[in-house]
Length: 104
Image 1: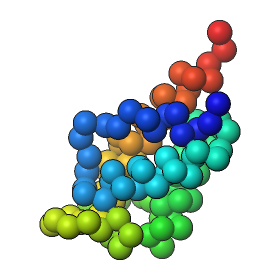
Image 2 (image 1 turned 180 degrees about the horizontal axis):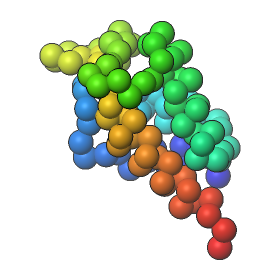
Image 3 (image 1 turned 135 degrees about the vertical axis):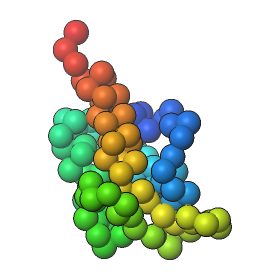
Image 4 (image 1 turned 45 degrees about the horizontal axis):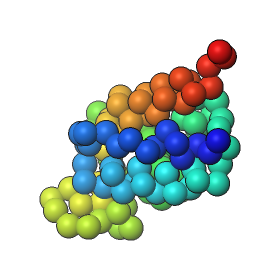
């Protein structure tokens, strides 16, 4: 089973306009990754954020990154909302992964 399975159902709400594109970027990369632990998932997402934005993914209020490859128009085009990822995106993905990997 590949890690991309946890990305299949998209959230109904996002932080900034670049968030769905970053989600898709992670999903594409996860197509070639096997399942990992929830903690490894968080570290992987943070490493990918750093790779595409040049900034660390922190919980500092109001922090975000603008990533040109995710800019497709609109006021927050290309913006990745750190707070959304830390408070909603990463916890959602970690819970999905934990559900898949829990012992039966």
